[in-house]
Length: 98
Image (cartoon, rainbow, N blue to C red):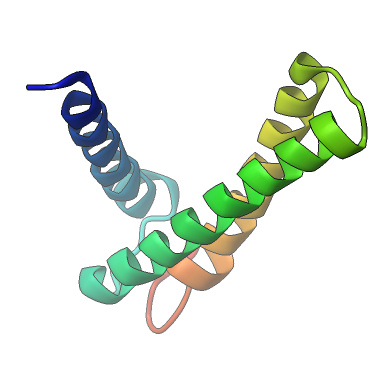
């Protein structure tokens, strides 16, 4: 398996594990897992794109250091994803938010 394929498989496994753990243990959701999985994928795609864009803006336009940009983007992303998971992904349409 190529390094690119191995990386893609590893990333997919981590996303599935993240979904299952968040659904079962963090938010204790009992809603439709299919709808939640779709919303989870939308949030992941949108937030990851925004992370990359924010990182580029901080480093190239804002002339911030790589380390500073990573820390700021990761912290904001964590808070944003938690809010979206709680309110939109797992607390939506019958899911119980913790």
